[in-house]
Length: 207
Image (cartoon, rainbow, N blue to C red):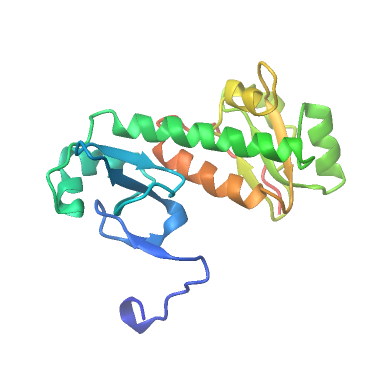
């Protein structure tokens, strides 16, 4: 039962409470942290490290608040140290995780890169997710539309997308429905929350 007597929808999986905002939300929208034997706090973006974890919303302001107000000590109920650059480290780890997932999708045939290939997938309604580099040309990006009922990711750099596809740079990419698409979208949303830069727009909306 949520606030106001409204039943909460738990179909999105387990929920955890953010130590910075106090809000309870699905785990996939949070960052898990663990404390090492030396008392230092480390991000566990994959959620697999052993030990007790505390959670912070995937939001740079929440992360900065958790560090600045020493909320990790309260969460762990112990004297722990959170490095000043913790939010930047979370961003690096999330970026690497998104790139690796897109790379896996590419290897399984569920992702393509390049304007013409992406346009073909969109025309055939084979694409579920449109990805465009934040530092790509706005004019070029506006020529492609987000898939009907699909998702748009526009806050990865051309270098990051390039790494995912084994190239120097990539501006346009697409993911097929199913496969790793849902995980890529979830991890990319976490990255967007902690990334300082804007997403460069949302493509030409459709649907």
